[in-house]
Length: 234
Image 1 (cartoon, helix red, strand yellow):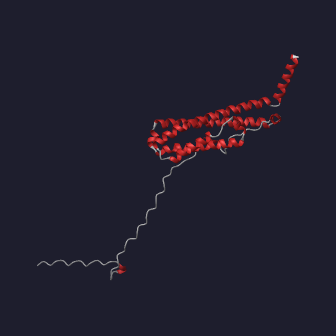
Image 2 (cartoon, rainbow, N blue to C red; image 1 turned 90 degrees about the vertical axis):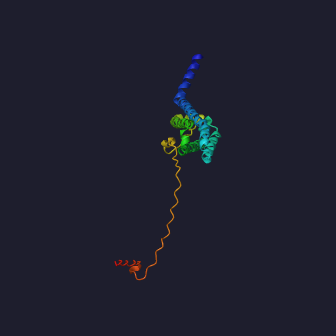
Image 3 (cartoon, helix red, strand yellow; image 1 turned 30 degrees about the vertical axis):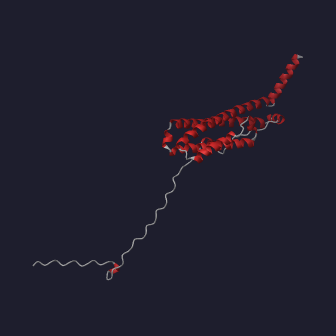
C-alpha cells in the first residue's frame, strides 16, 4: 500500500513538472521577491523626503509651490496600498506607477531649487540627503529592472504551451509590468530649468531736434560768421 502511494505521488510530481506547474511557481516567487525590493527602495526614497523638505524650507521657505508639490506627491504615493495583489491588477499597477513618477518629478524639482541657493548647497545635511536620494534613485532603477525581467520570465511561462494549459486551469494570468518607451528614461530625471525672465526691450530714443536751416546757406546748412579783420597798428 505504501509503495503504491509513493508511486502515485511520483507520477503526480512528474505530471506536474511536465505541465510547467513547478516552473510557474518558481517564476512567481521570483516576481514576488523582485517586487518586494522595488517597494523597499521606494519606501527608502519616501522616508528621505520629509528631512529633505525640512532642510530646503530652512533656506528657501518662499519656494512654496515646489515644497507643496513634493509633499502632495508623497501623500498620493502613501495613499496607494502596495500589496502583492497590486501586480496582478494592471489598472492599480498603472496608478501606482504614475504616482511614483509624479513623486520622482517633484523630487527632482526640489533638488534643482538648491542651485539657486548657494548657502543651501553648502549645508552638510542637504549634501548628505542629496547623496542618499541620488543613491536611492539608482537602487530603484536596478530593482525595477530586475522586476521587469522577472515578470517577463513569468509571463512567458504562463503563455507558452503546455504551461498555458496549467495556467488556464489554475486561473493564473500575466502580471503587470512597468511600461516605458525608453528604458533609459527611467533613470533620467526630468530636465528642469529656472530661466531668468527675458529683459524688457530698450526704449526707442526720441529723434533729436534738427536746427532750422539758415537762409542763404547751400542745402540749408548754417553759414559760418566772417572772420574778424586784423587790428591795424598805429
